[in-house]
Length: 387
Ligand SMILES: *Cc1c(COP(=O)(O)O)cnc(C)c1O
Figure 1 (cartoon, rainbow, N blue to C red):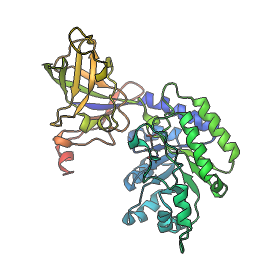
Figure 2: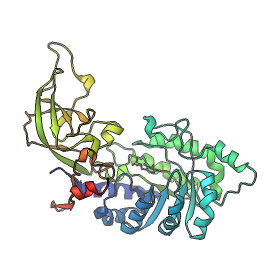
Figure 3: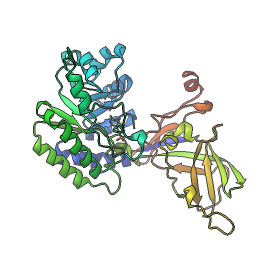
Figure 4: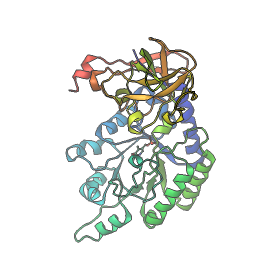
C-alpha cells in the first residue's frame, strides 16, 4: 500500500527558517494552503506562521477552522453565492480586478474584512509560461494601464483599498524578487501611502539549500524602512513543506529491457494520479538512493555509455504518458522492492486524483519521536463518492 509520509522534523526545520525571516524583518508569513494543507500539522505550523491564505471558499474554511491566525483569500473571480460565507471566514480578501472590488468591496468593509487588489507588476521572471502570471495576456492581476482605464470609466467608483498584492515568482530567489519589487514600486508605488499592507505573494524558495536568506532579510528591511506604515506579507506554499515528505511506492513489475535499452518498471503509484506536477510542471522527482537520468544524457549507438541498472518508472494507469522518469539504481530491481520518492509533501496530497479508479495513497506522518502515524486511509467509497 503506497503512502505519503510527512516528515515532522523536516517541516519544523523549514518553519524555523521562515520564522527567522519574520523575526528579523517584522513581515508576516502565511501558509499558502494550495501547496500543502495537512491539518494534523497545523498546530505546529501555527506556532511559526501568522496564518493561512486560500484560493477558494473551501481552503478559506479549512484554514479558518484548523489553523487560526489570519485567514486571507485570493481568487481570479469570486463566486457570488459563496461571498456571504467567505466574508464570515476571512479577515483579508484580495480581488483580481477593480470591477471585483467594486462588486464586493463595500460589503467586505462592512463585515470588517480588509480589502486588497492583486496587481500585475509586468515583470516576467518565472521560467515556465504556465507559472508566469506576468506573461502577456495573463488574466492574473491588474496592470497599471488597466487600473487607470477602469478608474477613468464614467460612473465607476472604486471602494477604498487597504492593500496591494502581487504574486510573480515560482521557486525563485531574492534576485527575482528584487526585480519584481522594483517593477511593482515603479508602477504602483504612488498608491502605497494610502495602503495598510502589501502582500509579496508566494514562490519564494526560502527553505531551499543555498537560498540567500540574508539577502531576503536585507531586501525586506529596506522596503520596510522606506514604507514603515505598511504590514508586509509573504505567502509561500512550497517553501513551508519543501523536502518535508516522501511517497513510498513499490515495484509491481520489471519489464525486460526494451528496444531503447531501458527496462520499464511499473510502480503502484502513478504520476498522473499521485504526483500530477511531475506531468504538469513537468519535472522528474528525486528517488532516494537512485540517480535521475535525463533522456538526453544517454549515449546512443553501439558501445555508448549506459549507467548501470537503468529503469524507466511508470504508473499502473492506461495513460502512455504516465511516466515518472528514468533512474539508475545501485542494484537490480525486483518485484516488491520499495521505491521512495523525495519532496512529496507539496502539491501532491492537495492535487491527487483517482483517474483510472486508482486508490489514493495513505497519508502518514513521521513524528519527531520517529513514530509513524497513519492520518488518512482511502478506499472505494472515496472513489465512488466523486463520480
Ligand atoms: C501559488 C500561489 C502561492 C504559493 O506559491 P508557492 O510557489 O507554493 O510558494 C501564493 N500566492 C498565490 C496568489 C499563489 O497563486
